[in-house]
Image 1 (tube, rainbow, N blue to C red):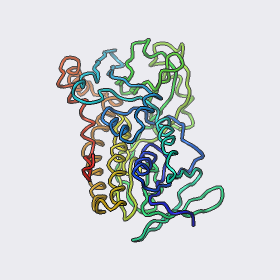
Image 2 (tube, rainbow, N blue to C red):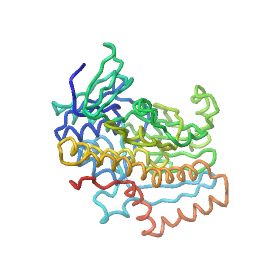
Image 3 (cartoon, one colour):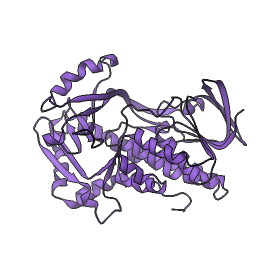
Image 4 (tube, one colour):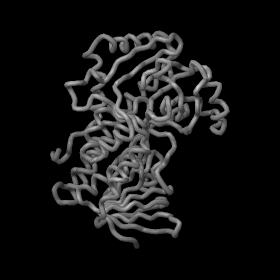
Length: 400
């Protein structure tokens, strides 16, 4: 049996590492586990809405994250078939919120920043190449078993946070159902270098089309045109191993020219609208994609995971320090599940319909009429931009 930590955290993505960091900052011993040998580098979420930035500051990583990425305000909707462009921006929130801009930064880089901060705490440990296998728990704590290069090891803790993604083995070990649907499309996330801005694209562009729909977002400003995330979808019945073979013809139909194009990385993946039936099981708590998975259109999956993190690490630290009753964790579980099912998941599904499934011309025109208001109606812009704030949970212990 290895050393005992107050909290075991499974998964070194943004949700796992930021929960660990928040707990460590609160003086809670924590051990973080990741099955791989290092931070996952494949294309993943990369846009942090303005509404989550205050939480990054509270956790002490905001300034370093901004230095690694960049802040932006502009949005664009572009209709592929007609070329119509609808533009608006977060400058409409100036004077209303503290930070009227989004942060663009690959989630792998945020994780690296947070791990640097976590390394400053002697009571925080990161275990790489530890693949979660199973757990058991009782009134006194949790024991989690991992396969490692040194063999099978078991670690004990008072609590465990499962932040190990949509295929969560922690959730599976608990026998918790993951209710919902898997979409019949496959998303393909690519990191590319291409002079999108020279061709008039906004730094976040939603390309609307039932065939060539895409979300295009700038990731950084290095290397000439910078790195961009280009995410499109295709029929999931197509063989996944043929993604690279199909990609050139697909992009050739969309890009104004092939000159200056470089594919740096790509990652195909299935999309879900699913939620665990419960986010707490005794001394185990689920957060992020382990608790709820949504298609990423609009960046609401990462946003929801960040808001899980901010309220969970604070509440759990308070319970451990005797400042709050365990019932606060039931409140976390119920409230975060409600917000996903009632707010985040319906909005992400509607975003996906608009961007990728605009085959009905009458429905598309109705959608565009609403979007066109964003160019002339400041109140409509503010209302739209404030939406992500509705995904936030207020502090459960009143400390913030």
